[in-house]
Amino acid sequence: MRPFYVLLVTALLPVASGLCAAVYKTIDEQGAVSFSDILPKSEQVKEIILQPVNTLKMTVPKVVEPVKKGSANNGTPQVNYQLVINTPADLATLRGTGSINVNVNVIPTLAKNHTLDLLLDGVKKIGPQRMPHFLLKNIDRGAHQITVRVLDNEGKPLKETTITVYVFRPFIRSKPADTDNGNSKTN
Image (cartoon, rainbow, N blue to C red; front, side, top):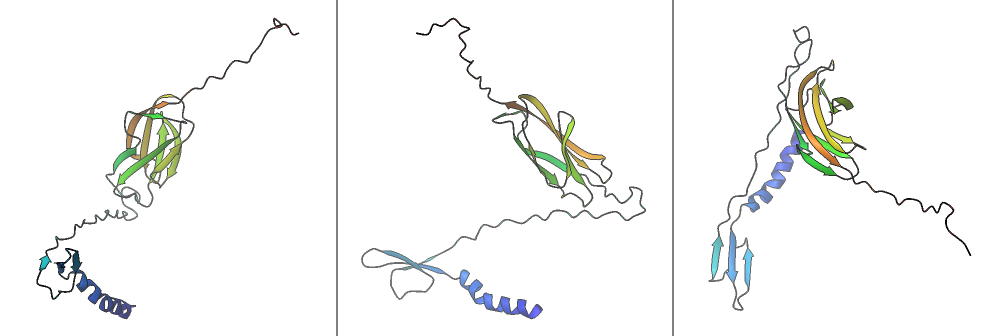
């Protein structure tokens, strides 16, 4: 497998070196501007200095190492989680059908034997699960407390966070049935 990587790097090296080549700007007799990476034989050549490419450093999540068996916490890693409910926002008013998408950010990534659950107004609705996305359906109008918890392998809460949301569901009043109570006359 190693010779494959050496061959791949060797094949791509000329392509990568071409990416760093100079860029030249020329203007011909008609005033048309052209750019090239090959130095033209024209007198009106200007070399363009390219700015460095913007890059971002990739952050690697911390890996939680499990504790060896026989330790004081029975194989459960001691992790200080940061738990944030990204959506919906705290104190948000939600309009619609009563469905709520709840997205959670957990830092560091959940340990192998840890899970999440969701409580609505103190009552467990969803979980345990490992995915940080929850869908609540048919939620009644009014104020509600949404709590998301990180649970250990025994189901004990390690961390929790709570937000309040206000659900506004339109109420469509149906038209009352047309009743005449026998008072109408027919011809």
